[in-house]
Image (cartoon, rainbow over all chains, first blue to last red; front, side):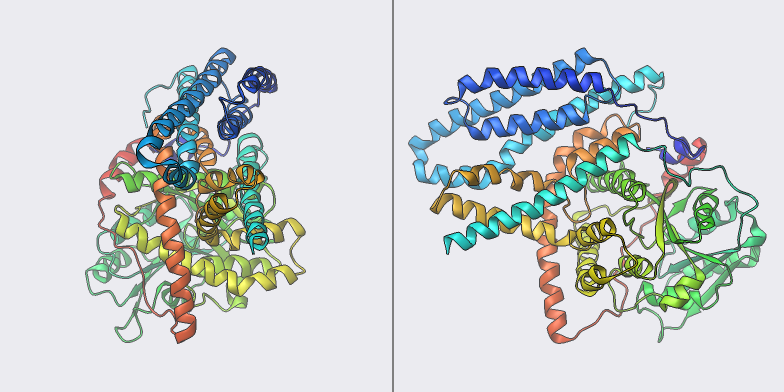
Length: 149
Length: 430
C-alpha cells in the first residue's frame, strides 16, 4: 500500500534482469505441448488452440524472464495449459448437453456472443495467479515478507 | 455488402491489434529498461528555481487542510516556494481553513473568486490563480492530493533540460482498501503510471500531463494562453499544445503523490465520463495539427495519434464485437475465427486510459505488490462500464456540438476526506 515510503527514499529501483535461459526453456516446453495438442485436433478445436497459444505467449514472454525458479515457472505453465484444456472440455460438454434443450442455433448465438469473454476468463485468472506466485517468491527471497497487499 | 462489413471488421481488428502491440511494448520497456531514465539523479540543490504551486479548490473543506499542511512540510526551500490557493467561490469552510494557513505561513496565499465570477470550472480557477504567480516553474495539485515531501525537487530537476516544458509525477491511490472501486482504480493507476507513462517517457514518446501532480514553465503557459476553459480535459489539451510548441514532457515515476479515488460506481461514471468527453474533444481538435506538426518525430506522432483516440477504443471494441458476431452467424468464413481473437484481447487493452491485464499485473509486480493480482480479472467490469461511458460521452459531445453548448462549470468529484485516516499510517513509514 505505502509506495511512497518505499520508493521515496531514492531514485533507483532494483533492476529486473530478464532470464533469457528461462525464456528459452519456456519456449521449448510450450513447443512440446503444442506437438501433443495437434494430433488431438478434432477434439481440440481452433478456439482452444488459439486461447492456449495466447496464454503460452503471454506467460513465456512476460513471466518466464522474471525472478523465480525455473521449475516453478514450468509447473505453472503446464498447470495453466491443463486448466485451459479442462476449461475447453467443460465448455464443449456444456455445449453438447445444452444443444438438447436450447437447440443448435440458439447455442451457436450464445457461444459467438459470449465466447470471447469466456475464453479470456481462464487466461487472465491463471496468468494473474502465476504472477502472484512469482511475486510472493520474490518477496520471500528479499526477506521482506511483511508487506501484504 | 458482406465484403464491406468484412473489410470494416478487418480494419477494426488491425486498429485493436495496434493498441495491443503498443501496450506489449510498454510492458516490456517498463520491465527491462527502468534504470535508463536520465533524470534519475540525486537532488540538485544548486538548481532550485522559484516555484509556485497552484491549488484550485471549490468546496473542499474536508481535504484542503491536509494538502496545505503538507505544503508546509515540503523540503523545497521555503524562500523559493509560493503556494496559491484559488478559492473558487466556495460556500463551505474552504476559504476559512486556507486563510488560517495563510496567516501562519507567508508563502501561502489565498485568492478568492466571487460568487459571480467563480464556479466556472477548474481551468478558470487555474487561470485566475496564475495571474498571481511569481515562480519560474508552476505546479498544480488538486485539493485532495497528498504529495511526498521532496516531490518538488524530484520534478524540478527535469527542467534543467531547456527542451522540457512540463513534467508529470506519479499518482497513487490513498484510499485503496476502502471499496472494490477504489481497488480497481488503484490497479488502473498502477498500469497507467508505473508502466504506461514510464514507458512513454523512456521511449521518448508523449507522456501525458495529468492536470495535477505536475508543472510547467511559467513562460510556456503564458505563451500558450493559459488553460482552455472550454475543454473538459484541459490537461490533455495542454499536453499536445506543449509538444506543438516544440517542448517535451517528462514523467518522473519517483515523484509520487496520493489521491483520494472515487469510491462508488456512480462517481466513477461521472469522473470517467468527463475524461472521455475531454479526450474526445482533444482528439477532434488536435488530430490534424498533430499529423501536420513539424516539431514532432514520427514515433511521437504515432503515439500521439493512439493516445488521442484511446477513448474511442471501447466503442470500437463494442462495434467489432457486434459486427464480428453478426458476420460469424450469417456468413462464417474461416478467417473470422482467427480475427475474433482480437476482440477479447482488446477488451483488456486500452480501454479508456486503462491498461491491459498484463500491463497492470507487471506494474503491480514492479511495485512489489503481492495480493492485488487476484483482482485483475475483475477489470472486465470496468471495461463494460467504460464501453457504456465512452459511447454516451461521444453522443453527449455530438449533442453539445449541435446545440453549441460549451463547458462552463465544475464537474468535480466530491471528496469526503475519508482518506485522512491513511495519512497517519503513511507518516509512520515516511
